[in-house]
Length: 271
Image (tube, rainbow, N blue to C red; front, side, top):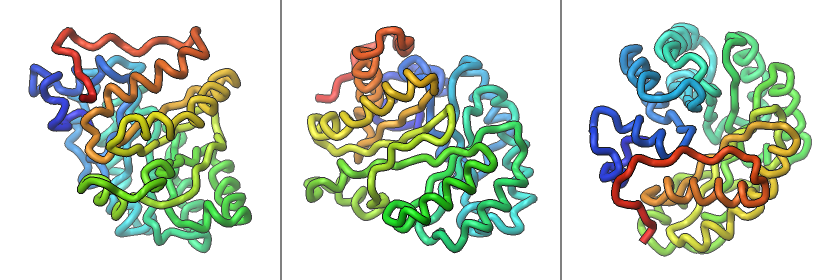
């Protein structure tokens, strides 16, 4: 996400956009790895631009999760793990985003795949099949599979996006592509990860995330260490929104560490 065109005004050095991004937020979704395993030297450059405590949540390649559906993907997995090794402690979690066709009857495959993964990393799984959200038995079965290996269930909260009809091309595109599932707020591990998707309207986006303020605050008070990613249809204002969300949590939990202060450039606004 750090190469987003809308954020380039905040990134004076095009070779170090990630370093500038890390001045705004302390975690990032590694989504490009879904489409291709990066070169190890490229990953080393990511590590060089970020502090050891910066969090990468890195998505496994689609060749593993979607094309091979976690079967016979050993070579692809080895190549991916070798490539991301330079991240070291920055690899906060490896992210298995499963296709919408992956349902309860496929849990045996997931269980077998998770068992063969190295314990070096944390793992978080995003499912999109409606049964996991509408059927309590299916949800319990998935929690059992994840719990056996200490993996997390990553919710993608799109309830705000789908709360009203789309009013822009960006919202219509998001409606066509994003999963329409119920909000899930249960953490399985010490390190829950949430993806939240709002709308073009900032007020609607902020109103929609209010339940998450209470959830994240409660997690922090329980001693958990959550990571929250905020999206809108065009993501142009997501950096500001992420900091606004963090400030809202911190207002009720002053002991929470502040986010880093961005480099001094013209202030970014949502308007």
